[in-house]
Image: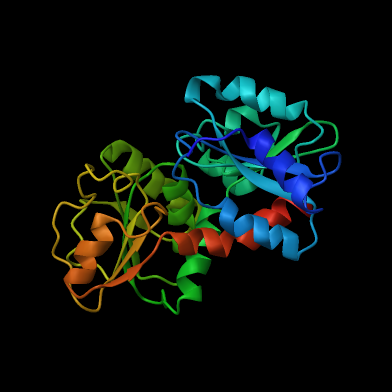
Length: 279
């Protein structure tokens, strides 16, 4: 359903006092398309619980318009900052004034806070959120052999966060092998833990992670080259919508344990709020 977000805010403010049009800070969640975005349904209740007068709203921006929109955010005093999703995470570093160490190294950003002077600081929390999500569901990473599929913005952050855990090995598979090799080298340099590039064949791994966009559409091919899933294996998604992708369904049917993409976002809620409102 399409609607005018400003009409929605006005309607909410007329019904109760949870939104004050003069004081409430806005946190756009920027993506393209924006129809799949579910994170506001998790973030807004958390903001209310913490007594923070702000609202997170989906904000659809085509890639070619991103610089113009970010410049407008920079000059809007109503903006606390913004959150980014596909496909904008790797385009944002060059639009920020300052980056956290991880965001600068990975050249990826999924959250930006706006200073009082309009300066923008970008961070990347996908990796921390993903690992925290795994742990929240009782998954132990110790001595696990992990296959990570993808080498984009979220995948880069997840690779780094996984390598900081006591895993046995990390293999990165990507359509562009050069990108996978570059990410493996970067992760090794940053953590001292060897990572390698390899095929998207899940059969020999304890944990398989899909950090690509493959699975968001019904017509998408599987991100793996073989569906030889097995009991005792964990297959995890970074995709939130649909809640259970075809990859997860096939893994579950084969007896593997599955981990939904929403756990990454739920585990990131506190991290995102702290970054935006408690610098």
